[in-house]
Image: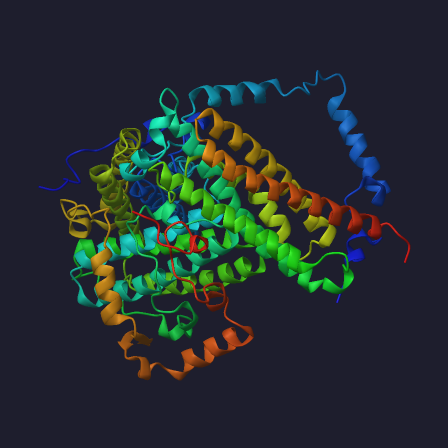
Length: 248
Length: 389
C-alpha cells in the first residue's frame, strides 16, 4: 500500500515546459509569431460585456416557499419578525441545513481516508473525526426544528441551499477521490470548516435582527463547536503538512 | 380532433435560424419550475439527439440523401442545443441523473398505457421496473455522497423505492432482443412509442457514459458503470422492437413525425409560458422537416406519406405522475425475467443471463452496496425522523 508522502514524491510530471525543452521552444516561436504587433486585450472586455448582459437578464435561482403550516408559526416565531422579511431568514436556515447535511457526508468520506491511513497519523484520533461528523448531523437536526418552528418546510431546497450544492461540489470531489492523501483531505476540510464557522456567525446575527434570540442562543452553541472543528482540523493539517516536508 | 399533420407546412427550412445567444438562453429554474418542465426538456433533448444520430447513420448508408440529411440535421443539432441548454448549472450531474430517471419512469409508464400492442406494452412495463430501481439506487447515492434529497428534483410526483433489483437486471445479449412490430400492420402510435423510448434510453446511456468519469467517488464511478450497462441493454431492447425492414426514408419520415408528436405533446402540457412558446416554435420547425421529408418520400418511393404516419397525430401523451400504474406494475410484474424475446417467471430465467451477471457481480455489486439499508425519507436519511407535513 502507498503511504501519505507518495503524493509529494519526485516523478515524471509532464505538465511544465521544462520537461519538453525542444517543443517548448517551438511553442514560443509560434506564440511570438501570433502576437507580433497585435493589440492584446488581457482584460477580457468582451467576456465582461457578455457576462454583464446575462447578469442583467437572469432570473434568480428560485424562490423561498411560503410557510405551509401556520401552527408552528403562531406558536413561536413569525409574528416576532414583523417588519422583517422572514423568507430571508428561512433561506439562510435552509442554506445552513444543506451545508450541515453535505458536511456530514463530507466527513463520511474523510473518515474512511483516516481509518485507511490510521497508522500514519498517530496524532489524529478517528473518534474525534467521528464526533465532528455527529455534530454536523446534530446541527442539521437542530436546524430542521428551527425551520419547523417558523412554520416553514425543512424539506424544501431554498435558493441559498441550492447554491451550497454548487459551492461545495469541489469539496466533495476532492475528499472522495481515492488518490488524495491525508494532507490534501485536511486542506479541504479546513476550507469547509472556515466557511461553516463564518456561516454560523452570520446566521446568529440574522437571528438576532429577526428577534429570534432563543434560536440565536442555539446557534451560538453550534458555532462554538464549529470553532473547535476549525481549531482541530487546522492543527491536524499543519502537523501532517510539516511531517510531509521532513526527511525520512 | 387531434393535430392534422399535413394542413400546416410549418416553418420552411431556410427560415429555421438561430443565434448563439438563443442557443445559450435562460435556463429553467430548478427550484420553481414544475418537475415536468424539466422532464420535457430532458425528453426533447433525447428526441433531438436521436434525430442527429439517426440522420448521421442514414447518411452513411445513402449517398443521394446526404445533402438534405445535412441540411435538416444542422437544424436538429441546433434544436438539441437550445433544448439541452435549458438545464441550469445548479443541477449537479447526479441531480440531473434523478431527472433522467424520472423521465424514464413517467414517460415509459405513460406510453405503456397508451400502447395498443400488448407485447410492446409488456416490454415497456418490463423496462419501467428496471428504471424505477435505478431511481432508488441513484437517490441513495445522492443522499449518501452529496447529502441531498432526490425529492427536491422529483417534487413528489415519483416514488423512490426498489424495483426489479439492478443487480439482477444484467442479462446475456440474446435475452435483450425483442420481436419487432410489423411495419405493415402496426399502428402509427406503436411505431412512435417505440422510437420515443429508443431516443430516451439512448440519451440516458450517453449521459451516464459522459458524467460517470466526472465523479471522484469510486462508489459513484462503479454505479454509473453498472447502470450505463443496463441502459445499453435497454437501447438494445427497445431498438429491437423497430421493424428492420422499414426503408431508410420510411424511418426518416417516422422520426420527423415522432419529433412533431413529442413537441405537440409538450405544447399541450407546458405550464411555463416562455418554454411553451419555445415548444411551439420547435413544433413548427419539425413540421417543416416533416414536409420536406414527405416530398423526398414521394419522390424516391412513389408512396403517400399518409400511409406511414397517418393524417393526424395520435392523442398527445400525458406528462403527469403515473404513480398508481407504476405501483400496480411493480406488485404484479417485478419477478418477470426475459428468456430470448419472451417474458418468463423468475425460475425460468436462462442460465446464460445468470452466468453473465454472476461474472460481472463477482467482485461486488455497486447498486447493492450504495443502497444497503436505504429507505427514502423526506429531507434525506440524516433527518432520522418523519418531518411534520
